[in-house]
Amino acid sequence: HARTDFFLSVMRYPFTGSVTALELLEQGLLQIVCLGDGFHAEGRRAARWKHAFEEFRDGYRKHKYMDDEMRESLGVMEMVLELKKAFPLRFHFLKGNHENISNEHGGGNYPFRKYAYEGAMVLEYVKQFYGEEFLAAYYQIEKHFPLLAVGGNFIISHAEPKKFFKANRVLNYRSNADVVYGLTWTDNDEAAAGSVRKMIEHYLPPETWESARYFGGHRPVAGLLNARADGQYLQIHNPQGFQVAYCQPFEPVNEETCMVEIPDVTGGM
Image (cartoon, rainbow, N blue to C red; front, side, top):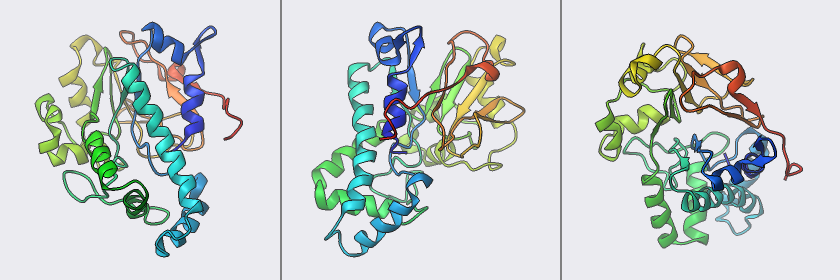
C-alpha cells in the first residue's frame, strides 16, 4: 500500500547476522514473496486522499497531493519490478485486489474506493500525466502477477481462499474470474468452510498437512497476526506495523516465532 519506507526497511534488514535481505537475495539464500497491493496508501494518508479528491474534481489543474500519492505507489512498484528483473526466481509479487490500474469491473476485478475514489483518481492521473501507452503496458504487467505461491510447508495468496481452487484453474486464472476474486477479495467470514484445509491438502504433501500454514493479507490485523480456519490461515497485514513472516521452506511453521518486526531504517520518509 505505497509504503516505500516498509519496503526499503525490509530490503535492508539483516535476517542472518549482518547480512541484509538484499544481500541474501544476491547470494541465492532467500526468497521473498510480497502479498500484493502495491498501490493506494491506506489510513496513514486518509487526509491526503481527501485533498487529492478535490484536485481530481478540478481536473488535476493542481495535483500536489496526488503527486505525493503516486510517487509512493509508483515508487513501491518500481522497486518491485527492479527486484523481479534482478532476481526472477527469488523475488515474487502476488496480485492483490488493488492491482487494477484501469479500475476495471470484470475478470475478478472491481473498481476500488475507500477514502475517496482511489481507483478512478489513479486511472485519470495516469492517463493525464503518463499516457495511454504507459497505462496499457502497466495493465499487462498486472495481468502477469501470479495469484498463489506454494512452499514446502506453506501456501500464500493475497486473501483467504473463498473456496477450493484446483491448480489448473489457478494457473489459468485469466479466464477464471472467480479464481481472481476468490484469492484477492475474500472478506473475513466469506470463505467456504474448509477451503484453507482443502487447499493445503491439494498443494502440499500429506506429511505437512497438520503443521502447514496458509499466509495471507488483505484484511487488516491489529497485532502480528490473526489466525483463522482452525489456526491454519494466518493473516499478517498490519497497516501500522513493519512485519514479515520469515519461514524455513521445509520446516514446520511456528507462528509464535516466524513473525519478524522490522525497524524503520528510513527515518519515516
